[in-house]
Structure formats: structure tokens, C-alpha cells
Image (cartoon, rainbow, N blue to C red):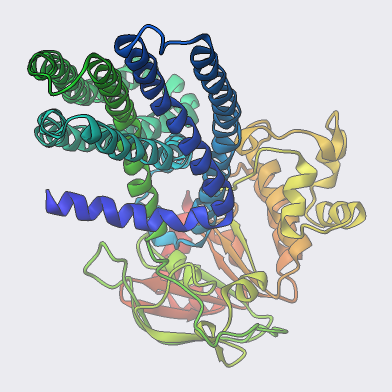
Length: 585
């Protein structure tokens, strides 16, 4: 329990800084909460005053007293209405603003995380955290301070007022609260554990749904709809099982509360009647006691009703912190500077690399020098480290040991932003954002003019098919560019890099998924793009790299062969065998 308490305190401490911008809104919100509480606590005292007057002497209950009490209560109710309006409107808006700030921080942190994080993360789970989790935090941010503040005032003030009437009866009534809190805490812990488990499962469920829907064409082509339904049903039933446990805990929580409600009422009715029979309290005090206990129980009931939201909020904060506390594996050095102008001389110095989940190096003690403007092609069996080698240049991953330099400067000594601005990547798996063709090309240079975008498309050989589309450059490409062919998407991605105009280029199997006609069109675009730039080309189709300045054969043993196409074919080694196999296909 102590660990649980410390965990909750730590989470709340992490959350509190988000109130800083809105501290005066919160202060006034709590002031309004205090006003509404005072209005509620005054009513039993008004009833006590009228009852006292009525029981002490018929002459004491005057029209003037009744009207004064009525006017006082009406004035308090008007204050209560205004205060409640502020709490319900501005207070909720404050919670939404905090949610907005947290979502901004969450998304910003996701942008900083390294490739290695996304190698294992599930997008559906992240989506769940950034949407439903943060919505629950909104309610938590607004209601948590209010409800506990109101409950605290009511409990303290009720105790103080009731003690003026009868200390023994007050102590008897309040003696019920500690065991009540103890029992409810047990159910609270179960609820929180259940809510966290349900959040994890809904993230898994979302991830599965996203995976199935994004791959719907594959599902339908294999007629595997039933398999997808069975996978979904398995996750759905697991979510149901978790929710059952949560609601059993919640039912125990609420049922215990109802029991203690009844217990407190019967204590006041029976014990209060006995004290009144002995003359320790009068009828007016007895009435006030009943009303104060009602107010007290209403407050506890509100806390009970809020407990679910409180637990959801804490769970949301916990899941939020799990992400924002994750440190990016790759960060700029404290003294990192802008890389400035780049010629394109690249050197690998005794570079080794292995992925976190693997024990074996993908690259070991690799040395390689590439001159500015040189075109280098990488070939070899899958798993030889071709893509890994290219991913190290823009620091998508960091070397395990050794160093990489550009124009003599270590890439770890420059900012990642300036480094990646100098490198263009054209991959096999083209990603187009949901939007227009123009917007997707402009992603390479967000402030590009229409003329620059059209020129980039022309250089990429994409202008003809774009102009032929009904809306031209304003044509909507669909999610992930689903409305375009593979060759069209690839040429748009090349246009994007033309617009970026980087001195260093990485072509990662950019034509391997295309048909022959599309390959020829894209290959011509790539040759234009690579001209005058330092380029690395990963290729399985060996005919596309015949004109490379240097071809490297990369295997698990490192660079086994190096030379031009003619030199390597004449050598009769690994490249020659690969080329013969490809030529015979």
C-alpha cells in the first residue's frame, strides 16, 4: 500500500506543473468551490435557528426572522449559482487546456524518439494514449482539486460545527469514517489495477484493428476475413474479461459506501435520539445533525462517484509518463553545432553496430571512404547490413562503436536537424501523407513556391501523369497514397527529394517493387537525382547499378568485394555469381 501511495504521489507531482499556466484560474475555481460549500453548510444552521426559535417560544418565531433567513439563503443560492457556473465552464475549459498542453508535449516527445523505439512500439496503443487517456486526464485536472477541496471543507467544518452541539455524538459519527476509508482503499487499488490493464488491452485492440484495416486489401485478397474476425474476437473478449473485474471492484466500492451511509444514518438517528432523551442535545440540534450528516454523506458519495474518474485520471497520467519519461536513444550532444555547407566526403572509421535485441553485430569494424559526388552501390545477401549501413549516416541509429564523419566532422558533433537536412532518402516503401500531391512534394521544402514544386516534379518525371489527373497537383492521394500506382508514388517521393536538393543521397531499393516500365521511368529520375551528389544505392536489381562509380559487396563478414561493375564481373567472385544469377532470371 505504501508503494501504491508513493506511486500516486509521484504521478500527481509529475502532473502538477501543468497547472502553472492556469494557477489563477485554479485559485478562483477553488474559491468558487469554497463559496458553494459554504452555501450548502449554511442551510442546516438556518433550519437549526428556526427550529430553536419555534421550540423555545412561539413568540420567538417571527415573520422578520423567517424573512431574514429566507433572503439570506436566497442570496447565498445566487452566489452559489454564479460560482457553480464558473466551475462548470471556465474550470472545465482549464482542464481541456491542460489536456491540449499534454497532448502537445506527448506528440512532440514522440517526434524525438529514435527509430529503435518505433521498431517495438504499436501505433494503435500510442493512439489510445494520446486520445482517450488524455481525455480522462481533462476530467481529473478539473474535478480532482475541486472535489477534494470541497470534501475537505465539508468534513472539517461539519466536525467543528457538530462538536459545538455534542462532542460525544460527533466522535461516534466520525469514528465510522476510518474503517470506511480503509475498506474503500482496498477496492480503489483493485479498480486502479483494472483500469490500467483495460487501457493496455484497448491499446492492443486498437493496434490490431489498425493493422487489419490498413492491410484490408491483403485480407480480402486471401479471403481471410474470418481469421481477422477471430483475432479481433479474442482481443475483444479479453477486454470484456478485464472490464468484468473492474466492475466487480467498482461494485464492491459502491456497495461498501452504501452500507456505511446507512450505518452513519442509523447511528445519528439512534444515538442522537438517546442523547436527546437524556437532554444532552435539543430538537434543533438533532435536526441539524441529520442535515449535516446528509451533507457529509453527500460529500463522501461525490468522492465515491469521482473515485472512478480519479483512478482513470491517475492511470492516464501513468501511461502518459511512461512515454514522456522515455529518453530518446539518440540525442544531440550538448555542444553540437550546425553542420553548415556540405561537400559530401563520408568516412566510416572502424564502425561496428548491433541492434538492442540481437547479440550479434550486423557490422563489425567497418572502414569505408566515399568521395564527394561519388556514387556507391551496395549489394549482397539479405541481412548483410546494407540498409543498416545507410541508416547510420543520418543517425537513425547510432554506431555501437567507431565513428562516421562527413567532410571530416563527426556526425555526433553536429545537430541531427542540420545533418538530416543534408541527406535525402528514397526508400522502397514510399510513404505519402493524406493530402494532395502538391502538399506531399512540398514536404521536401515546406516554403517552396508552386514553380519550385512543378520543377521538382518535372525533374522526377512526374509532371506528365500529375497534369493528366483531374485536379492536377491538387489531386487528393488518399491514405498512404492509395489512389496512385507504385511508380507514381515513387516518382512523387523522388520529386520531394529533388525539392529538398541535398548533397547526400540514400536510395534504398527504390525500384525493387516496381514493374519493368515503371522501373525504367523511376531509374531515369534517380540517375538525374544522383548526378553530382554523394549517393548510396541499395539494389537487388543489379542492372540498375552498372554505372555506379563503385560497387561494394557487403556480407556478414563485411565488405568482401569493391570495384566497378566490369572489374567485379571480371574478378569472378561473389558479385559475378550474383550478376549471372540475375541475368539468367
